Length: 152
Image 1 (cartoon, one colour):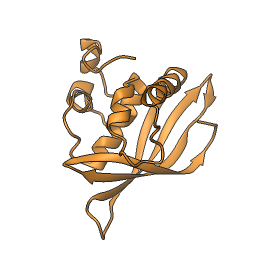
Image 2 (cartoon, one colour; image 1 turned 180 degrees about the vertical axis):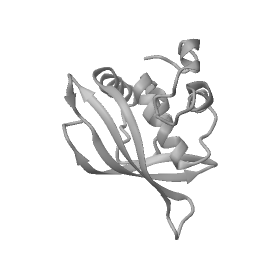
Image 3 (cartoon, one colour; image 1 turned 90 degrees about the horizontal axis):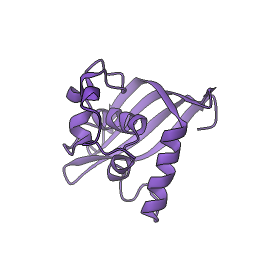
Image 4 (cartoon, one colour; image 1 turned 60 degrees about the vertical axis):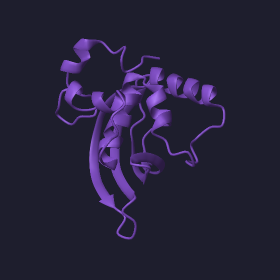
């Protein structure tokens, strides 16, 4: 799996795969390099591009330690994420809504549509993700799939 430091320098001057309209080097690359994402939306976008680029360690590092998706066997989890990344074409991301929890500013939600293909089959889905702010950083906690076309 590539490391953010190993990414081709040319990639930093290409459009970011998170569909922000910015160049990768000015969008998700700083977060992949270790800068904390300032908002849940920024973290959402950087996680999508991390999946597209196969940055498995970033996915693990930005998943909350108590997330139901977290796996005890870190090596197996990273391998599983890598297999998913390699088998998936990440065609685009559309942000539908960003919202903060009115009772707790350390909780935020991002609803998005991910356009994916696996073996030329549409695997796109819509999810409402929950993010938690802890120790000065945003983390992905969980997501509710609102619809899916194929099995992801």
